[in-house]
Image 1 (cartoon, one colour):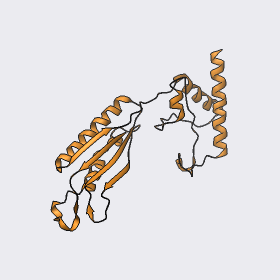
Image 2 (cartoon, one colour):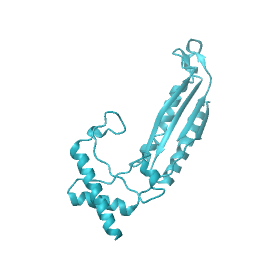
Image 3 (spheres, rainbow, N blue to C red):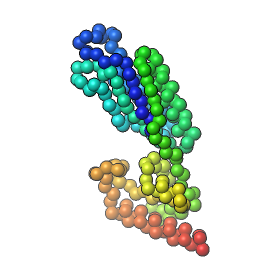
Image 4 (cartoon, one colour):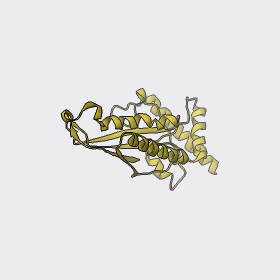
Length: 197
């Protein structure tokens, strides 16, 4: 995860001629638009600008500073490194074109965590054996299984939620889908236990 800061100057809107305004929020928007980094690395990439802080945060003052975060997710560490480079290059280019100061700093990094192929296969086989529709997916969320994978072979089973909404208080998984997930878990465990004997 990266933190970015833009610093031009702050001023009262009425005191600045329109053509001279280096409107920092527009530049932040330009960074976001220019940095379509997540789309450039589809289908597995995700890029989120989820936090923006404007200073002085007054409705008739041109902001003197904007701070925002950029969160990248991808299952391949080499792609994350490329996304990092592209973000820095895009921010530097946009800042230089508008005579702004820009700083980009990485403040949190979590490496991609591939799961145990044998266990992923056992989950896939269990879904097939039960006749359930299924697909392999990549989760960018920091589930507990990421930490478990450091000490033991790990895989995950996801069930559909209404509207695809997850990690939200209105998340709604239907009983039949939950039952299917439990059946897949049971059969994957049995298959793995039999393979170990």
